[in-house]
Length: 175
Length: 457
Image 1 (cartoon, one colour):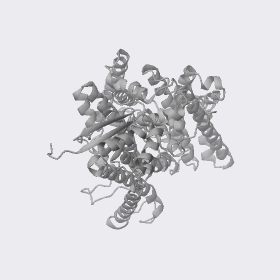
Image 2: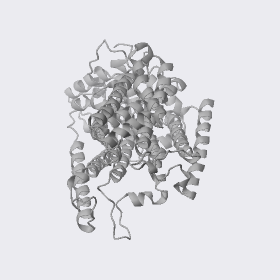
Image 3: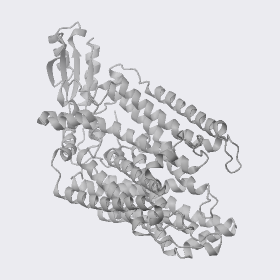
Image 4: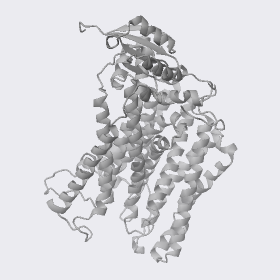
């Protein structure tokens, strides 16, 4: 274990609506929230926490574009230049029959590229064990972690603010 | 905040809480398998092994063991291929298209339906691979890989090659989409195992859950990924059966050379896929006691999709006949006349009865909300859809241009064995899935518990 310990205050919320109001109230008091862990996607939570929209769609588009150009280049080069063959008297390079494969490779690369990007930016991999602030966060509790080092307010003051904004429990967690 | 009409029936019954969802769905993964699971698994494995014997014989002897002849060069193999691919389509429709349309009733059924898609596509792929005769060279021949003949590249003008790309893309993207959805649920099982002190299970599901922590930022990205994957899967699923129909539609064989094939095949695929989802889920909800999650309302909605797609298919059958008559091409007209009145009349009329007439029974609310009736009809629909592919494929080619080449197709034990092999494979995979994976998407169901449960806020 690392020698420097990180101290967190963990607020537990029982309900997503209380959580959403709580996040606004707590941020309004100037408390910096490290992260909120929820058992299911809570709509509006990303905006309440002030997160910017994910740029993954842009990644998907770029990967898709790579797939399109790769597929077209491959087909045109193989059947048009590397070994041209007369098939049914058609042109060596005719676009319409190349469309299905182009479309499929566009979709394939867009999907795989985006998902790979998602895993990388979210640091998700098979052998990773996540840091658990409260194990109930995958069951039915919404768990708010507050890094004490990042906040100027004292532990007691933050605990008061959490309670006042709907947290059903406030615990300490050190790593 | 979600607004839900009070006119709509509740999607989850029994006044479930978020806690109950974790408990009810994870229980099947955590408990020891029941006796009925072992029996079902045993039967599937017997089918699988018999089929495997037939497949091994085919690989050893060559495809001559099938009942194909010079005239009927495509029969059960391609029939089964199209049938299985079609079945897969419902899973993608439920998980992708219904997500784009924000249909919340998909949430209880999408996981099992997507699993069905993946297994069905694997089953489908075995037929073209087996038909190549040399299974081990299948991928080498089908993909544009450098080779010692030049390189002599694969023919990108051929719909059969488009199929290779379409099916493999479809399989990969469906698998990824399914797995992304599974990750948060694996984390639920991981954390439950940690709390129960089951170290082995916790370690296995920890690896499967990719270190999922449920952070708000990860959820935001996750939802973005799910939406884009749905947006990619929607044209993908339509393209797959369109390309499968191109295998026939781009040929010049009367009966195949038809421009309505793509939409007609896609509608048929969704039709048969929903029937298979119903067959599987009616059994699953009973065995795993999931009646509160997969309700009569879900079954009714799926039956409505069956009426719609069944009617589209029915109109397509009639349109084909109309065009064959109106088009005044004698060969085309004969192909259809022979289909309905020739030696395969029984297959044609079985198809018409199962696919066009029987789903119309679902116009009666009593029948579409009745479990037993739905179960029987879902099987009838799939029998009908098998006959549809058989009719299109075999009746169009068995009477060749020269009457001296006219022939019939008689399946051998190995034709049947291949089909049984895929059934064994499909059900073995499905039962393994049902035992080791959460059969319902817990995270999604939890997110609608408040707005859609009987217990109002």
